[in-house]
Amino acid sequence: MPPVQTAGAVATLLSVAIISYFFCKTVQQKSSSRKKELQKRRNGVVGAIGNTPLIRINSLSEATGCEILGKAEFLNPGGSVKDRVAVKIIEEALESGALAEGGVVTEGSAGSSAISLATVAPAYGCRCHVVIPDDAALEKAQILEALGATIERVRPVSITHRDHFVNIARRRALEASELTSTTRKENQIDANDSSQINGHSVNEEKQNMKFPSECKGGFFADQFENLANFRSHYEGTGPEIWEQTSGKLDAFIAAAGTGGTVAGVSQFLKDKNSNIKCFLIDPPGSGLYNKVTRGVMYTREEAEGRRLKNPFDTITEGIGINRLTENFKLAKLDGAFRGTDMEAVEMSRYLLKNDGLFIGSSSAMNCVGAVRVAKALGPGHTIVTILCDSGMRHLSKFHNADYLSEHGLTPSANGLEFLGLS
Image 1 (spheres, one colour):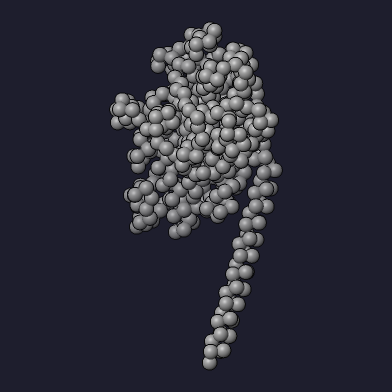
Image 2: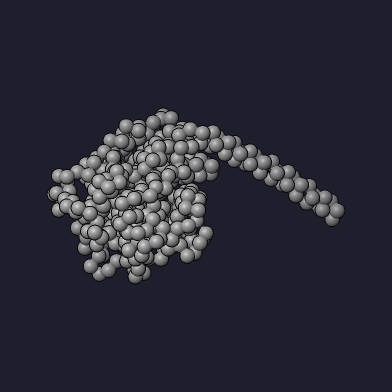
């Protein structure tokens, strides 16, 4: 009898092994097929993303005695550094099966990330649904509409509120997926559905928007917490900077919104050479400066509950935050500097006048940071920063004289005296 049992056990193990072999082979074939399809996509507009020039900012270099270089990310097809993130997020989602061709990518964004997703998504056969705060520059919403994205404009509230634009975007992805799983003919989620997200059931959400009946599910890009953001810069932007400088740089500085850029680039550069100094430049009201320099997010005077706006006061867009994202946690920083709105405005006008660079608010703040680092390190150093986007999508606010006048931000400097340089 025992031999019979042994034979049966062997037969069972053999059957399991055979089944496992064919299952793994099928998975590998599907994965290989997905990768081949993604490679074909890269032959189009996606292939033009990245490998942006690293340009010398002549006026700042001559004024500081340092080589100040800017990564011209505004030359990406979608017009910003966020193109890299959009590609990485979508490709990883498609490879994992979390997103299917014909699906809807949702995101809560102040503008640039949404524009990049709306630019890239069609190249992968997907649609884009964006939830945007209604105080973002009007032209960003206009660009999104022109790109074919579905747009929801909502009032700005704290990230802890269920109707923060990011949290709404998360729910929209769930709704699209639930619509696909229940019926492809209905445009609303079944009222009895009890799926949970962010602590709220889907049937609590009264939908005023509709997804197309052919929708093949939803995927929340989650740029703040999705580490594909970090990887896009650790694997792309960082190595490009290293190669373009032949490894001969002394410092890197950038502001943080999601934290993906400063984290990915700083960690890559530190891994290559631990002597490279990496810094954060932080706009008014953001808590990251305090976190980096003091280990706490707020001072007593800066607690979010005492702020006037939502939740920080700055005209710069896409940078500054009052929480630690999973992406920012990976940053390797040696210190941080603060920048002001006035400095960013003055810097943008100075660079336009002296270098022909027409840049947006976050790019201007990064250049303020580059000068701060140059002053701290002294002449003879090479400093790299990011020129995130151009001024083209900032015409209604940051580059609007009337808007700036209303906020007491009319530029008046003739040189770099606003940063203590002649």
